[in-house]
Image (cartoon, rainbow, N blue to C red; front, side):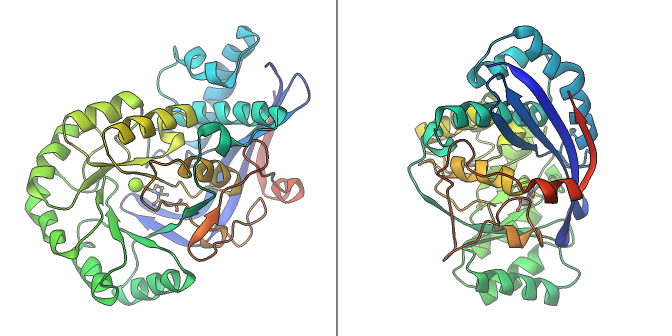
Length: 366
Ligand code: SMG
Ligand code: MG
């Protein structure tokens, strides 16, 4: 295909409640939306998962917009005709930028699949028509508030709870939630907040039968995670450290992780995600689909991926209502703890353009 027009749009969508992690508090989601139109007039949609500031990863919304405009799109334009399958290779000379590249590749893939009449789920090799939902719970102001928030999610039907932790907010909240829900699948996510000397402390989480500890140490500290894995019984799961198939392969070889959180934006797209999934299936490593507080556009595509057979753990693919009062698409509604995988061509869903325009803070056509 060829791209005849690209629309880059930044939107601002308030969250239903502040989301605090070890690196900061989000009260609103700034999202870079990409829409491309191909030579046959078919439109594809994607969202870039980068946040407004480089706190979770080095990428951020305005940086991604700049990278796409200045380097990625001109490269694709000068290449001429291409398939979505070739985009990553064409953009490979530009280092990093996985989130920007993933968004562009996904918008192109969406248009390609819409034109073919194939759903993303079918194209990727999905074997499920619904996906088990987990929910990620931010650091609360008090144990009482945490108990109340978790209670509301359990009541809504979520099948797995993930608690955000940091030094000073770890053993006590986990012990409390575990005492109230002795059998619910429970895991924690530190977003790199600990250091190599915290092994003995983190071993205090072992009695609570957690599914995993997500990214306790610095994203570059693969060896540190391997050492930590010998000090704690709870499985280690890498998130920020896994930026490609190569990094997944290396982390597994070094025994730094025994579970992997796959986020398409973080690894450069859905093709790379499927490669990591396939490697993990071969190595009998469970995977689950992470989340980046996506709108319905990103969520639709993540559900297609999470429907692949190796995704054996519930992901952070929660219902629209967990994030936004109003989503930019038809809301994803959870039924009995599951979200339905879209079946229409491409990502299978469209944004409400009028609503999108009303929350747009920057727009340009290229
Ligand atoms: O999409 O439900 C969601 C958020 C899941 O906790 C979540 N994401 O490290 O896994 C993670 C974080 C990254 C984004 S925090 C704003
Ligand atoms: Mg994480």
